Length: 247
Image (cartoon, rainbow, N blue to C red; front, side, top):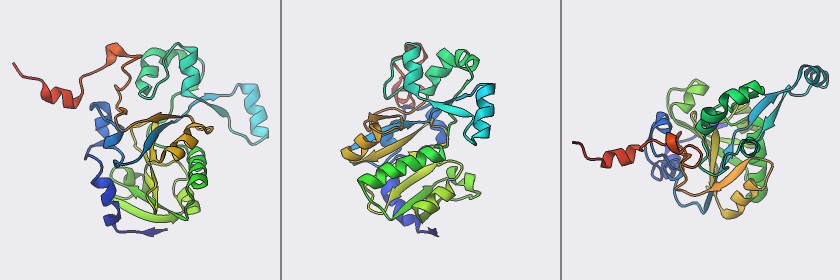
């Protein structure tokens, strides 16, 4: 793994808006403001909910050296609780309508800000199968780089193995190959990762075991993005508020 010049990230900086991670709580934030423009297709990969095993199951799993919980997909919970599953579904929907019920069932909410390492590895396998690569760029801007004890923007060129070692506890930031044929982005306030790439690449991700849904550059990613299941909760966006007349 070698550090690279930040000049190699200009295509990202020039293709996205300058925004703070806290904007996801307020603004009408869209994928096209988080990923460089020009990709044919996009998708969200949802971070799964988790449910702890029962006590008896836990003992068996410990003996087998397996995980003491299982992943649960957003769509499964949505279908069971009469929610519409769509590409602007937000975690706020689940917290507003189902938080107590899910907690009573022992279901833990996805953790914002870090793409589970094993699922991230699955994604890289899919991407490599569709568009072979030798090395990857890891681009972390503040505050993402703070997770790695860096107080500045950093860019590394690394192998797949080095990338997984670097993100052994979860991925946040940007990752892209040398030919820039796709890009993955995970933000510390998002309960999902964003991917931009060719249609064939996105279709492969959406049809995989990962829970992914196809999107466009205009698909919202902010906290209040779900205008179907939480109509009463929708807040005016930053951009719409700027157009409001005072007095």
